[in-house]
Image (cartoon, rainbow, N blue to C red):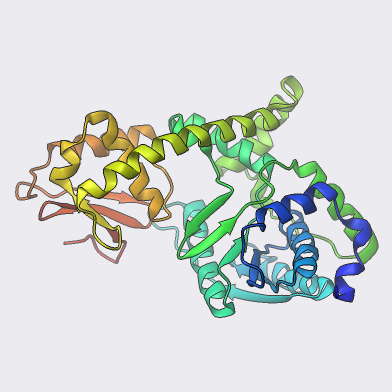
Length: 347
């Protein structure tokens, strides 16, 4: 039997959005608890709404997770709106306040790292192994464009994956092929019926941030000249992921030859250097991705390759210390290691 709360909003659902959520959850075990990352913006609110309907239809329990970054004056109101929405759609909502330390990484990267850490903590407490994220076709197109401008390379253009493993969680992005216009239309219908309004994050269009600059300055130009650019770039992302899968299969054959640690945090430098040069960079990308880290730019990766190829195999002449997001890549006793960032550099 469906909860009464789920039936109240039947006029607001979008069939394509519902179908996409059902497809994304098809491989999730029946009865498994699910989570939705809920910022209380229109995108995540509509994902929570549609996921609640699918969860009700399939007998799954849904949790909403809200992360309070404290970066905006209205952050407390966003938290309240998240809990109000969860109450309206009849699901539980868990929130967590985090402190964002942008020292050395930049605000966007620091906030993202804090958010994922808090989501993992909340999911563990709620017994959730799958968390839905509301990224959509517009987000995907922006990501492809930003990676292209940053020189991430052809495999990096795969951008956001529909399924991502991080911190022992599976993150699902069911709406990467759905235009945001459909989501906003559903949000308008929901607001008209419920009176609930989504929050608006001013940083989303703040040109001081790369993605905000794309939205505020570049997107209007592209809309005027190439109105289908978002759909086109999202298609490029799908094609790049197919190429990436082919490359990944090859890398998986190389990885066991590098004498990797059981936790995947380290491998043999000497074994890596025996690989053909064309296969060394893909192995590094595979390694970082397996630990839930973002891909470096081509320029940064080239610099890493140079240092790793030149450093003494036993690391006696000098040690490599390469910072990447919240980690250090180091060479110690002939092994390449990924070390979480601490208050000081690794010894």
